[in-house]
Image 1 (tube, rainbow, N blue to C red):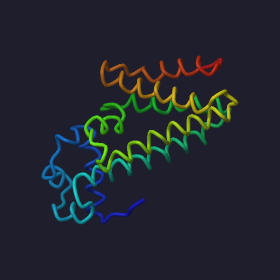
Image 2: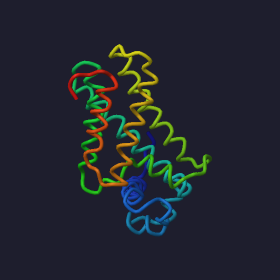
Image 3: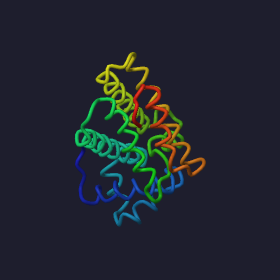
Image 4: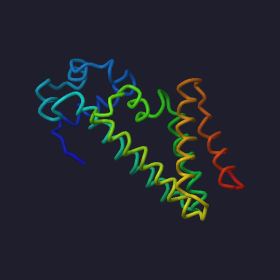
Length: 189
């Protein structure tokens, strides 16, 4: 992961919060540098452009999320099927947090429709990693067609994230977990 100056790191952290709570397109460079307490030259020296800052924010979020989920699954232990369903528990924790506005990667994809935007690669990489991780757990659980199961489970996850945004359904991820348990034939969800 890239290392930034203290001002660059502060800008990354502030931009992560502001982009998530207020939107990427709605947030200008002036707002970001003011809230981070840095200058515009710091932004451009560290990131080159707002577009690259968006990509860096999502890359930082991706690294943090992947490490956190990986550690959670190690600590959870249990069978592969139990760990597969535990992914939904981990995600449900986020749904319960004040200010949760859906998946930051999906939100960014909606705001950044240009496939050439530098953040689009990061978004795809995170979603691909999660789908692959779900597929790996499905394979470890001995399930037939684990790649297809990983894809289907990602659809459940993305749907649950959308339910929170659309309807405020904070229990959507646990409902998705119950559907996942039925899909994989698990007895306990």
